[in-house]
Length: 243
Image (cartoon, rainbow, N blue to C red; front, side, top):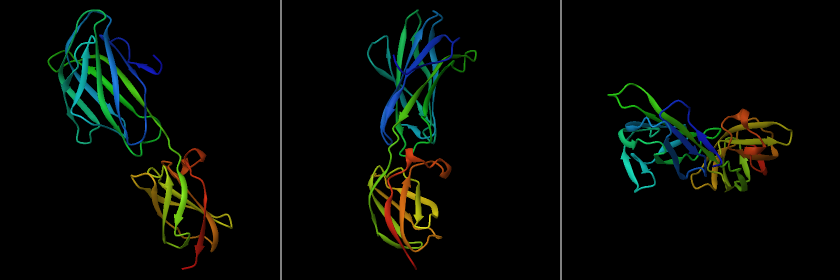
């Protein structure tokens, strides 16, 4: 399989997971496969799943299918921020060489995930009444599409210092920065806020710009230092008025 991540060696179970493609704001399934390669067997275990920032678990449980059989689910408990999901004493019942169990969990991708591709991590741990041991572990990488914003129009086109500016366009839900530049070449970066619907954003004209024509852009970069062509919209004309 392409895009497969394997867990560390040495455990009783070989655990693999396959990458997932996702849009911001979507719900996806992170799936794992645990296979008994050593005939040591695992009856019960604690399933501990951890989601990177920008991801949250949708349900209080983990789905499973043992050796391709009837699907079921292990009940679990989520942390207060829905970033950790624990299924205590899950009956894996994997005993013989080649026995396998598929595990899956639903994850919501945030509207503005952090930089890079976040992961969902699974650790299959021994229950509290047994010697501490990790039976197997792996992670699913969520490849989140990075949507470049596009501005169609702004309102108003003439704006005074400190005045609000509304942007309409595409992929604006994730914008964080507005970049204003005047005709003299001075550039000022200020915060912007995207709307969840994705086609609206708002900002305010910052101080320090000369009266006259200028240009404004929007960016989805996490920080000002990361603003670049891969996360910045087209530029549109704007007029800077005196107060």
